[in-house]
Amino acid sequence: MLLELDHVSKIYGDLHAVDDLSLSVGEGEWLAIVGSSGSGKTTLMNIIGCMDTPSEGSVSLEGRQLNDLNAGQLADVRKNVIGLVFQKFYLVPHLTAVENVMVAQYYHSVVDEEQAMESLRNVGLEDRAHHLPGQLSGGEQQRVCIARALINCPKLILADEPTGNLDGANEKIVLDLFKQLHEQGTTIIVVTHDALVASCAQREIMLNHGVLVGEQWNDEDARRRYVEAGGKPGVAEAASMSDRVSDQEAAPSSDIPVGFADPTKAAKTDGASLPDDTGV
Ligand code: ADP
Ligand code: MG
Image 1 (cartoon, protein in one colour):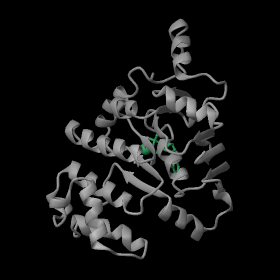
Image 2: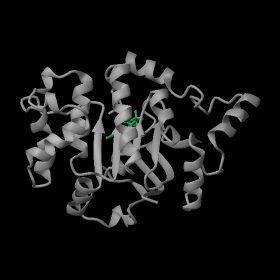
Image 3: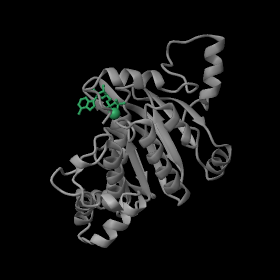
């Protein structure tokens, strides 16, 4: 397994933002995390991305316990293993597209414009390289962010609502990029409110109040490989989301907020009416 979370909690006072969550993610897997807003998705991503530490439990990435690493070593993991894509673009407004990509190189102490151009070429933006973010559409800005995240060829892409601000056409461009990265062997974890984006992943897990309440595989071969590699079911009592959905049909329960059948379209609508809750 590339990533293993063992009984991870993040506790703020009385609030368990992430609550006793165990999860394994195999090398090369594409996982989607869904759940209504406030369910702990970003907190979980920050923990996986070495930007936050759990209050309880442990995380291991590439077989290394993150708890054992010091700040410098954690920064190295962030730099060398992980590529981050956010809903908000976080581009420097007075730098051009190619310069924004080079900012990521700067943190790797190698600034190489040709390599930055190559990364922009990979996302189809070579001809926009010398435009400022303000001169780019939302979709183009997100592609610059993806180019920036790809600069160090990360093993693991963490994307928190990457298409949250995009229209359908740009969402498709970003999804196609993810598909390409996945085919090249990159492990992808994407938080999304969008049923279509979630359905592109091989597996979806659902959080509710920080608890992992559901799991659904969309790709049976991937599920088999995961099990063969020793991956455990995400939900403790080994209930898959489809089991739960049929339970629900038999005896409707208010515990499960949103079903995978129409994962989180409703949540997306909620998100749209709450502009402050950007999901980042
Ligand atoms: P999501 O990304 O699913 O919308 P978050 O992970 O952002 O959810 O937040 C989960 C819960 O944790 C929310 O109730 C949020 O208010 C709370 N939370 C997140 N960060 C902090 C923090 N730094 N201090 C206190 N509460 C926090
Ligand atoms: Mg969030």
